[in-house]
Length: 258
Image (tube, rainbow, N blue to C red; front, side):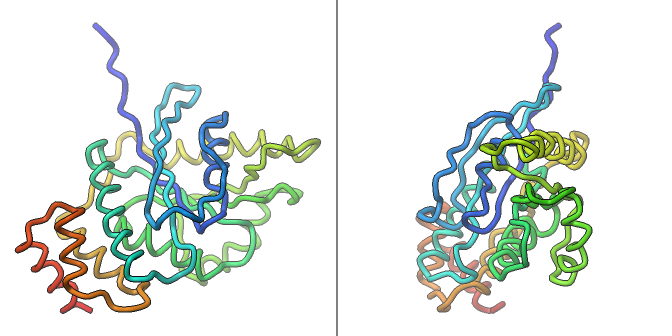
């Protein structure tokens, strides 16, 4: 009888623009599979999918997604974000749902963009129902990389950034000497925390009933100018495949709630 292989686990990785999520993906994979070119031209919630297999045979699909360039959206960006979010969740649903969120931040102060990205993915997109692991990068100059978290965990909690686990790492692979040793160490740290929190016994989150209207309504918080009802109806019918009647009901509900 042929061996039945376990399904891939789905991971969504995100962070503020320029944080280096592509480098984290390459670190996790143990090879360069993601381009590390600037991603400032990409739209909020645009994603790229990468398959990764660990040495023990465990398979993952990592969805590299884009957060905010600034903690606010123009109307057009808001509508595109709705479309991208709908496509992302539908794609993940077909693959078994979201199993883990990896939130990449630089080792530094908490920024408004960082807080906005956290809310967008953990609270709005996944309704606080998916485990989140904090990945702190650029820590090669720390004597012990874990020391950064010890010093800053209180600050993170003060800004309501909560996580099920964390990984203090460097994802810079062009280092030498002791810094190069930290890169090798970081690969093990990252893989262990992924294995610990991406549990094969748990079902992936697929978005419950009423997920889309809830997400659209919450996302309005980041919009510079309140979108028109006709704009919302247009994006729901043209890009999300809703009938006009259902789209109108959703748009009206969102306006009533906000």
